[in-house]
Image 1: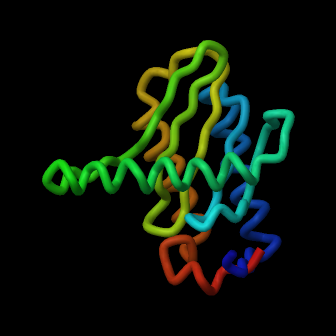
Image 2: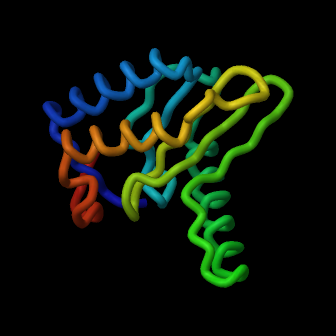
Image 3: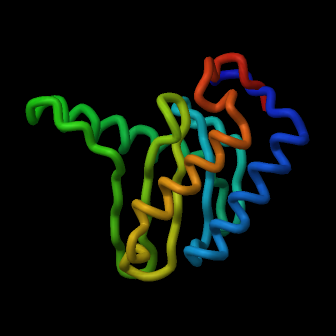
Length: 139
């Protein structure tokens, strides 16, 4: 696992942005994680340890990227799954971070790609280090 340093001021910004986003898209749970599965920030609850979710989401996203390469270099921008009771949307924040979002119900919110893009832009503006060398970020 990587070592992360996120200063308390930055952590507060990230949490506020994620809470506002959670309320606007009515997400049950959102986790910002490093591509190694380390959790950086989370809001909401899924009622269980989220570390396996972060690790498996990273593996799922990386698998989709490999499938895209097999299909001639298709660059998949997100991965989503819909179940009977919950749905999930996984999308990158630059190269090293992922946003994993859990929603109640079998369908994702309309325009989730647009809402996600706006959150990513706000996160990067709030914490520019997210798009720099994240091996230097420490939690």
